[in-house]
Image 1 (spheres, rainbow, N blue to C red):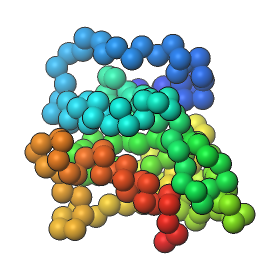
Image 2: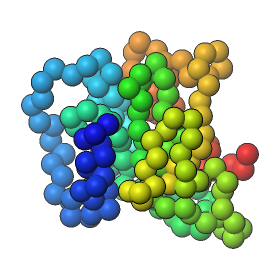
Image 3: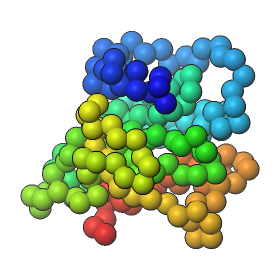
Image 4: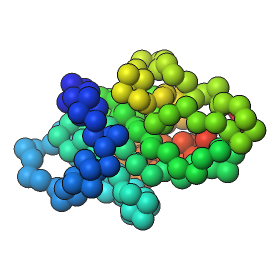
Length: 174
């Protein structure tokens, strides 16, 4: 998590230059943990979905964060695009990420705010407000009817199903 915070402090998320100069080619790294290998496979699986709007950036060393710099917000929001940050837990894929982060507190077209888009993280999620990230409170239950990852990363549950939950959360009033 230390490297994650170092990258935040260096401003990689807020700097268009850092994003444009980021090398999309994978570097040679030492052997990865099962968690990190799975995350890499899942990131490569979701990347084509977001490639037209800025791609997917991630921590190539520790896989502590995944960022979609141009994520389309659903119709109910005033703005069309946001930056979306996912922080996979150390226990991923056994445990789903706890919520997700948006680059600011967005307004709804109705003029209000979504109460799930907070400035404070809960449920053990890292507080990244000091780095400009606003936590969106949504949790996924483990077990029957909840998060149940398959051994095969291409099968649910994975980043695709998590991003489907993100879309559902941002689309509907709960």
